[in-house]
Length: 370
Image (cartoon, rainbow, N blue to C red; front, side, top):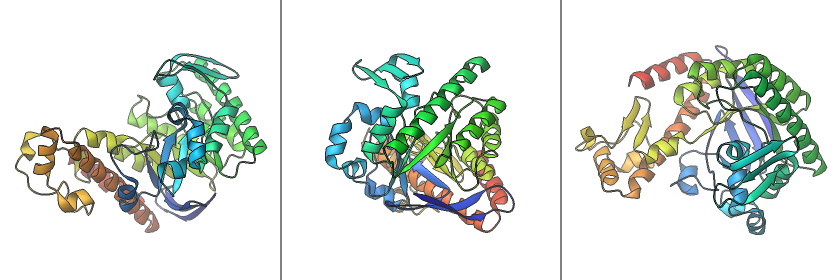
């Protein structure tokens, strides 16, 4: 996989680029809908592609538990198993181990945990996580790391950071031994401690990873802290490598991160909020279940060209939610995915015109005040 920076905004550190891989090309900045268990909730692959989605992210922890490595290998890899021919990134599952698994025990070798599904015992090592993602055929894979909770004690964070760095070294070694043909990123941790973020970033850069993810953000801290940590961390990452802000996907946070030079994002917001009836628009958030939309027979967003807005009204979609028809959740989720794709495309156009700061300010003001 190759990454090329194609243009830079003169008013910020925002940039446009292109990811080139055997599974196609992806323009950056890029937003990856979350296909946790090899599917984006309630949305088909065809609908994703029609909405402008070029890349998805799945989760190794969940896929390891169900359906398991052997099933996916027999299917010919994750792309064929889920019927998605374009790029797929996979998270290591480290965050899920620490947030979902029962009775986890961590040591320098890896982490022992019990499945949140049936209580069965498992053990992840940096090497086994690389092996599993290679079996999946991921285009971009993440190493095993520890994501500390917020707020976190600095001593604990520093010790955790050393563990994450050691696991990154072992992951890179395994990736080379297995002659991995895809891309392995490093994950910068360090909670909200800027000196630890710098230390982690510089040591990962010394490992010459294929790209760099910023982990441990969006875990409870305020948006200002997310932006400060992101902007600080990006300043230590190479210009010619992809930069990925993990799990952050509110409109203001994404635009601020793009302004700092981040290239990739993922978040469950478009589909999770969509299933709860919250539609995202440039004029702000709309809770379609509210009574004021009962006789509102216009689209969610008159300026949107998505399938939902071309064919359905807010009044009808509200009715679907009120009678518990799953179509309502699908339609709002689909609109939200399309909105994110449009937002990213417009951000790229603003970067090309050296007008990203004005674009960011305008979008955030309308979104917050809508």
